[in-house]
Length: 126
Image (cartoon, rainbow, N blue to C red; front, side, top):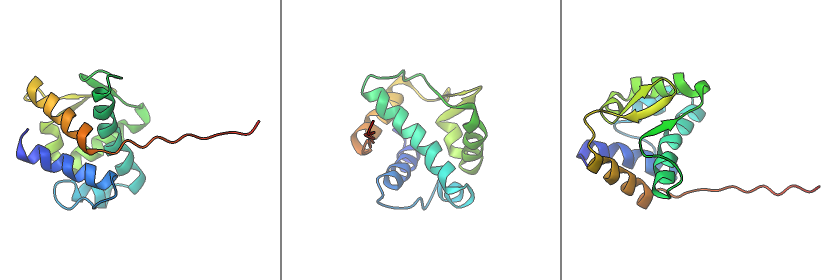
């Protein structure tokens, strides 16, 4: 995995694991996006890669809610290096053409190893 790619994923992972705030590549996006949208878009990326590692979804693309399309576009505008890793295409997040299959697996494995997967269960009384 390229160093800059690792740094971006480190920032996302540390933010979602509640260790540190984005302070380099994602800093501008973190400062300028509304906090819930920054959290949701970056969490969508991380959880997609985590679910891929669990064999639950495809590694080739992340389908996101159309409501979030402009939020993803804003994230990618504020952190242009994300465009070197992913592309926004219609309602999907896909890998950039320059990312090899080996890099995809390295990124997926890195996220899987480092992100804490939160699961919430709500019990209702009937």
